[in-house]
Image (cartoon, rainbow, N blue to C red; front, side, top):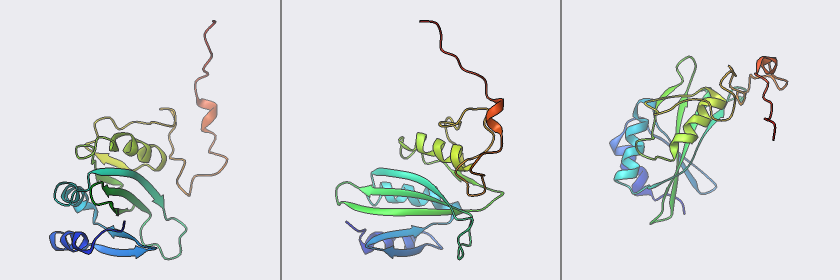
Length: 166
């Protein structure tokens, strides 16, 4: 179910520079990076968005009309009213830091680690921000649009893993 207008209005009344859009019945709001944690906490505690459905990142590097490089997307749901809302935070290099929402949603732990691993987004205050998909020795972020499809030759430096004798 789409988010109700009172939810968006209360978010806009409480925080500055909220940009709302709708696409195919799904409401999205863009929140400034400095207000992201407080806005998501408000949505959870006062508007009942008790479920973090997903957290992901989009690299807008080659988009014609994009003003920002990365869009961090939080997909939230209110399980009692079936409302859904996408909260986006736009980020640009060199500062790709945003406050971790793990204190609000424990499930954000691995999702934030994945966004760090694949895109290089740093979550300030995360309890254990380290690689989750790539080896620790891997120095790049492979889902960035400027990462070459064939890699940069990092794989030859990985330690060789062998299975123990059974």
